[in-house]
Amino acid sequence: MTTKSRWLALYVLCLGDLMIVLDQSIVNVALPSIRTDLGFSQASLAWVVNAYLLTFGGFLLLSGRLGDLLGNRRVFLGGVVSFTVASAVCGLAPTSEFLVVGRAVQGLAGASVSAVALALIMGLFTEPGERAKAMGVFGFVMSGGGAVGVLLGGVLTGLLSWHWIFLVNVPVGLAVVVAARAVLPGDDVVPGSTRLDVPGAVLVTAALMLAVYGVVGGNEAGWTSGRTLGLLLSAVALLVAFVVRESRTSAPLVPLRLFALRNVSVSQVVGVLWAAAMFAWFFLAALYLQQVLGYSALEVGLAFVPTSLVMMVCSLKLSDRLVMTYGIRPPLTVGLGLAAVSLALFATAPVDGTFVVHVLPSMLLLGVGAGIAFNPVLLAAMGDVEPHEAGLASGVVNTSFMMGGALGLAVLVAVSDSRTAALTASGSDPVQALHGGLQVAFAVGAVFAALAAVVGGTLLRPQPMAAHADDEEPVACAA
Image (cartoon, rainbow, N blue to C red; front, side, top):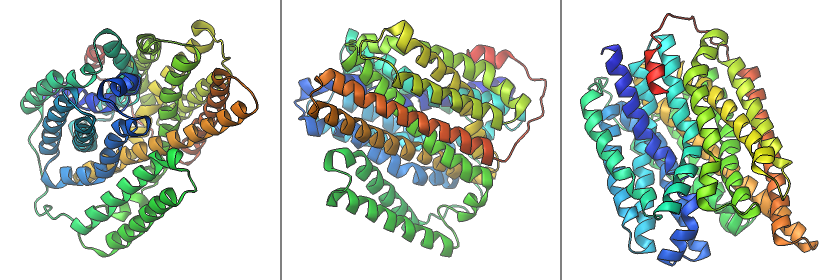
């Protein structure tokens, strides 16, 4: 493929994956409107989010392996088509049941797209300089998509209606399908690799779905309740059975030797901690703006514009240069350190805070930190993997981020709720009690980000990348 063709393919892949990332956060701002229109109860409303997380998290590993066996291009296209249809169902859903089913299908299709998009990019860009730039673009999509989702959700819900947070995916999805068929190279499946470890697939998919279900419902049911402990213990038992199965079969779904690669294993730990901090930041920041400072849905979306813009500039114009000059460890450590400072600043924001003094500095720091840190995390996770297992490695990366985000958000919400309840019992008014709970949660999130910086900075194997004289035009076009 020519250089121009590769970059066109990258933009198509990023647009397809952006739809998936957006739908993890775009719905949060619209939940009150959805509840009113479709008659959800407060308890059942959580399933608008949980149905998506459950199938998305459960099928990432299987989807990545199917990409290796059947072809990444084929799995990507099938996922985009399914996601587009499911989005139309969600946008036109007449009842709460229809919406929940549509969200579940969205999650399943989204897993197919996310699990193979990174593998396709790694196959398109093999030269270090170009790969670093491509990862910068893709890193912005994955890390900045959460901020863009909050912004877009607020704008669409505030100016139109909640239906459009789903319907907007339909024309985008159709455009991605047409463009992907034109620009993505044909699949190059390894001969004789069409065997699928069905028992292993069943075990790991069931384990991940039980784990996600247990985590996202832990705050409501109680972390020491029989239901939560039963789900989590069952997930652990299934994972143990999966590991035993993979160590004995001749054609494993996930070759365990993959985790013997130092950077693969360390990057999973970093990914879990980083996602826990990031997911919590997006959720808790929106909650602070809406329920403490009294912002409308549209105002919350606009408040995230600085984060999106700074993250875009750093991902597309700065991250690749830092990686090519210093390797993967220094940019990762500095970026995650800035994210930790961002969360710490939010932990000190007062109940009557102002945007310019107490919100904007944190927004800008988070944008810079995420913009320069995500690229080296992805390069570390994928750099040591053989091409024929890139889909699987991509699924593993996405699974670690998914599980880290779900677990981190659940833990921090539990911490926040506990502190809020204690302050309420001591006589604080509801807003002050909520604010006190959010402050503690932001502080714990800052610890997660700081731990990710320490683990990545000390344990990742350095990967210095020789600079090459690359054409700057692709990055300029992306920006």
